[in-house]
Amino acid sequence: MNDQQDPPHAEEQIEWRAAVQAAMRAATEQEIVQRHGTSAVSFNYRWEHVATVVTLAVRLARLTGADTEVVEAAAWLHDICKERRERHPQEGAKYARAFLPRTDFPAHKIDRVAQAIEAHMGLWREAPLTDLESMVLWDADKLAKIGLTAVFHWIGGSLAGFQPTSVAELIVQGRQADWQAKTVASMHTVPARRAAAARFAAYQWLWDTLEAELNGDDLHPAGL
Image (cartoon, rainbow, N blue to C red; front, side, top):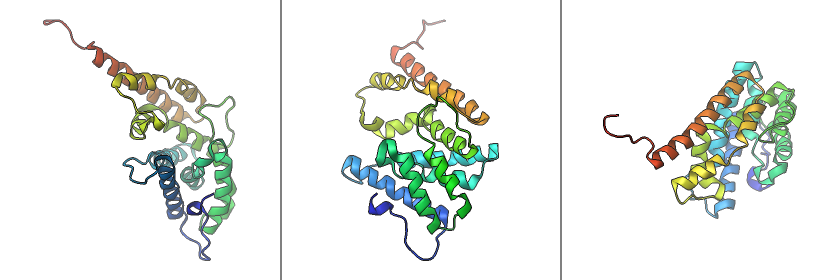
């Protein structure tokens, strides 16, 4: 783990919400440098994604009765170790267990935060999660990856390295995300299932509409 992400060592505890946001911001800025070789990048995809997940997770927590503190802390930290790729949930859970005790976050909730972070991997699931806070984080994380929000994140982040040369090529790339149907089917909570279905429909509508415009399908003979 890099120095920028190391847990704070001050004797006095710090306010947890400000602390996790600062830690996540530093991690996203380091990711930008590692990926692009410079910090002078106009769109911080990771920060946009995490901030969106936090908003969705907190709202889902309130709708489902999940613990909002657990969910919010887990949402801020779920990608804190993203550079570890497939191991990032496990490493993120370790980070949370080391980081949060240095803040004023309720100590008895830290293990639940780590559990939610550790369980958020995967774009779909064969078997559902059973812990409510883990369900909420998983649902929020995946909701941020489907629908129109995801499209603009992809474009802003140059589609994770892919830079389309035409709108037609962008449409092809967008339609290749066929995993989204599995994601919708994997949602745990009722509000997330409803939102996921609507977002997936909007996502498909976008590509169909763009293609129709490129083809001039909205042009009709005069008088008709």
